[in-house]
Figure 1 (tube, rainbow, N blue to C red):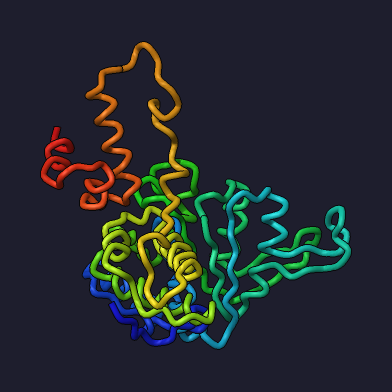
Figure 2 (figure 1 turned 120 degrees about the horizontal axis):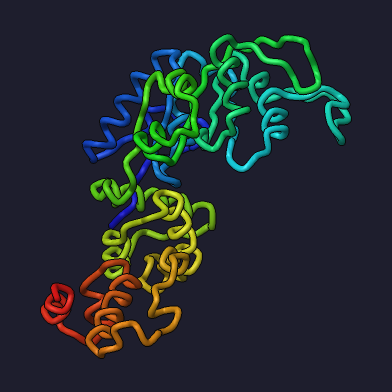
Length: 323
């Protein structure tokens, strides 16, 4: 697998830089291109690591606001006071440690785009304040009664699925309707298998250049592993995996030994991993089934490699899995 992708600058990319062989992803990109021609608010949905921030930046860079600022803000795990200060700014003395007046994200994004990630994690108080700012472009800095005005296009994102987002009861419906002028859903990487070769190739080239290496591709076993893996961490996990693999590769190709997939290590251990108890199925058949599943999981779902590790033929492995 040779590498020949074009250079890609994530900070200055536009929607013209995005290409896909996947139909669902192409529908997502087409919707993004339509959204870029409008000034409507945009809601981007997608699992963690699918590239929501990257798409938001590309939409901004492809819009009439491209000459203005792109300001990014993560709404997760912030207290109301801190979120208020971050979004709308504060005056000197507004709270302990506020030694000078500071502009908030809304003010900094004037004439440009404000990207609010993890919008679903906002508290009800913060939701009420941001609704007013989005509707009228008006807000006050924390500790001030003076009205501030900003012309901002809002793009928001969440990893929560749309139906769950709407039905949760934790998010104001009026704010949801205000934010979701155009809704774009990014498919997870596991559903974009036709894009994997080009994405992995581009990541290898990028990692090789950053590390001063000349990696030209993957050996067959490494390719089998990467192309059969489900990528629960999506693009973020893929990028980390490839950069580590390039660092561990002494030659011009990446071997299987350089592929370190760590996602299985973060999963909740099964009962058999934690220990056994008398009320479990303690038969050898049960233990064998567990062991086969565990080995297949560790091999990233690659049955050929799992069969080799287990000392079984592929047909025997298939029979055990069917059982």
